[in-house]
Length: 193
Length: 193
DNA sequence: CGCCGCATGTAAGCGGTTACATGATTTT
DNA sequence: AAAATCATGTAACCGCTTACATGCGGCG
Image 1 (cartoon, each protein chain N blue to C red):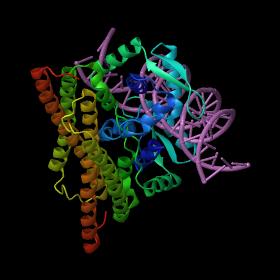
Image 2: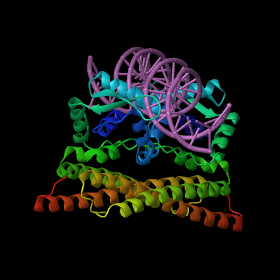
Image 3: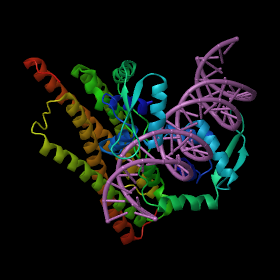
Image 4: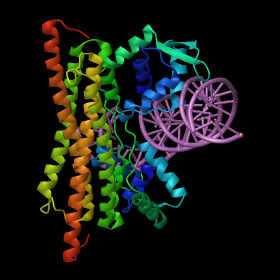
């Protein structure tokens, strides 16, 4: 039910489904994704249960906006979720499953190419997150001792993303080097498998 | 379709659905999970498409075992998956969403308790993975320059788990300390929000 | 005799993705 | 005139989880 609770979290201020989708596509994208269709569906279900309420508001461009905000029961559900302790998911890494079976391909060169691609992906993520933090530091004079508690928590979350990205990057670089050394060794003395 | 390909990967040697479930609950659990019901269902679908084939074998205890192994088309599908480049998923971290909204609870003490719990969870994971590596190092004299390519790739995967666990742990410890300092500051000079 | 481990499966439901459908306004 | 942006939604499907159902053999 995380999507529900995230929506309740965001709906402390009035927002439309369209706005919420932009939230998910923005900074949120580094730890949660939601499709537009899921957002509208969940909003509908939350309203049916009285967790949020909506009102129409005219728009500058396009059709009228439907603005949602959380109700008191909605706020209570959110707080209950927050009080319930860390919700740790079972993560799935398809790429690790691939790497695990890479031996079947019988070519360290393939592993090397694969890892080189990983290094690039990791680098890109790391750069993206670093830029977000740099921008923040530039815009907010109180950084990193942020005065708002909301900013403080948001920064902890950003730091998690950076820690992950840095770790993944270092792992990929180290793994690539190990694979290169291994390949040189095996091609040199004709050792295999 | 990762589950399918993982099963194909494991079915280079004959295994029953029951065996496969144990694989997922073992070392695999650190990067992929699969329920028993999903395994049997996927196996059925793979057999219908000729990707695996099965034979009955008597069991010491309990009902006869149905042993599956991958066919040549199955092997080709596996290799195609491996050749397709790293499959990077969109990860979802419910706990980061919680932390992001922790400000709504209006109490840094709650954040502190929450982070303390995170530290413990991270520590446990880190210990579990370290023990797996230590055990490996003890059992295999060629560690860490493993002679088999399969072991080599498995070790890269284990290293990824360790890198993640270490990063998460450091993040949690650092975050907890930051929160403690912040709380002391705010309770001292009566500053809020 | 009951419980545990071995071993097979089915059914219902939920969360998430992909694709489709519609229409207004602004920009090129 | 066409494309992009704003803005709403629906329908079908897929992967995964939870719960249920069955039955053998060994152990306390």
